[in-house]
Amino acid sequence: MSPKDASTVELVLPGKAEFLLVARLATSGVGLRAGLTVDDIDDLKVAVAEACTNVINHAFDDSIPESERRILLSLSIGKNEMTVEVEDEGVGFDPNALERSQRDGLDGQGGLGFGLMRELTDSLRVESAPGSGTRVIMVKRATR
Image (cartoon, rainbow, N blue to C red):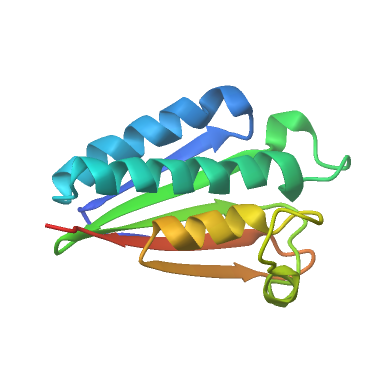
């Protein structure tokens, strides 16, 4: 996580499913401060939970002990918007493969979580490379 200003909340969560609620609650609280509507916050909580679930399920191989599997969560307030970064120090992947794997239906393996995140946010960017971890950056603007 890069240093942020005073309107940013940063959390380091264990890479375990039982901490998804903490990520959702933090998203909700910061979203209220950012001026997002309840519907905006609900969408963003789903997107954040999906990004964190991807970390839990895909970011780490067996060489990384469970005690070292972390989710780095950064929640930043902007003018009528919120930016969320979900970062891991896992195995990484080729983000270009996401574009190649997009499909219209539910057939095939993987790729659907990022599509959901894209639908629920106003902006989605994925930064990753094999061996370098992954950062997912999402922006949600207030719909008022």
